[in-house]
Image: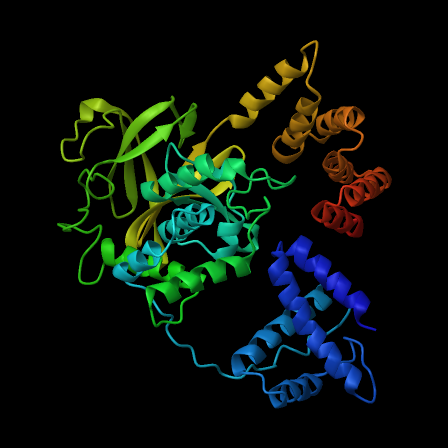
Length: 491
């Protein structure tokens, strides 16, 4: 009776919420438990028939099964999400879970590893084995960047920027962020790539995934747990350690090693850290550097490629941002004569306190992003425009005019016009040529279906999604089978 509702809920979680497969499965298991309870009752009910007292009796039922309060709270969270979906789709008129209260759970502080314990764990890795070299790179990356398990196993090579020491991470809700990565972690990643990874039988669809198992496919979450549990056991550490412990330890050590704000004034008159109205090196030690590979606009100011120093003059309501050409300056010998340009941006108050000075790129779009500077309760945002779309468009236009066009170029162009330029007509022209040259390329037919859906041609989108599903099934690629199936359900 509930299967149709659960299928719709699954599609909602995948397409509307953009949740990971792991999270989707967890929510569906929560709803499965409710349906099991409903089926045991004398009168089966639909989602619209369920009342608050039914959910309260369900809560008593799972409690009698011996479930811990934390597990009960997790299930109730899933039930609330299900009814949120039902309201959105007008399956129900009112939400019976609104007043449903989860049992109170005791929240204990997570275990945190000391620097010495981190070093002891890393020391247990056997670097004489291929897996050891890989595991060293994994642990160094997790601790250096404070990543979640899902972020580690899905990290791609194309999202590692070795020259500027940043990685692009896709986190919860399919949101991307740029994260600094330490030189030691990058060094072990390069060692793994050059000595181990390139010798693996890399499977189709995993060419860009960084960390692979010996069969050439991505690692599972469970595998990361096993790796860490084994190392902790060998190190003789008597703490409850999981991969998430490294994330908590990263945050703790960041505060311990950075500029802790307790008892100190930031961005105030005569501040010991960053006084108002005076040139500040914008960080600690050497001046902060900005490396630009192509021409960009900073708050409307043109900046050519090169490496620059960033200085700032904090103010109560506005900050002056200074781009200086002396990138080798340690930060204490600032010379205004070396300024490229200056501009001002508003200073905003944050509700939460940022314990350490933080710089991060956010609101990342194909042709723009923002550089945020945050410390204490103050944040400033610097808008950046890249002009990458116009440059790539010109390059594709020129390449596509050649006499002998590589068939793969049509697919690359189609991806560009669909994902970035949003020129769906050009995307369709190029993906059509790509499929004509590669009639067995299921991934090309999926892109073609997406483009046709964007244009509004649902009939063609349906046909090409079905073609993708057929070819992907023959190629035994379950990921594209699922992708095509999801697209068909959305039509």
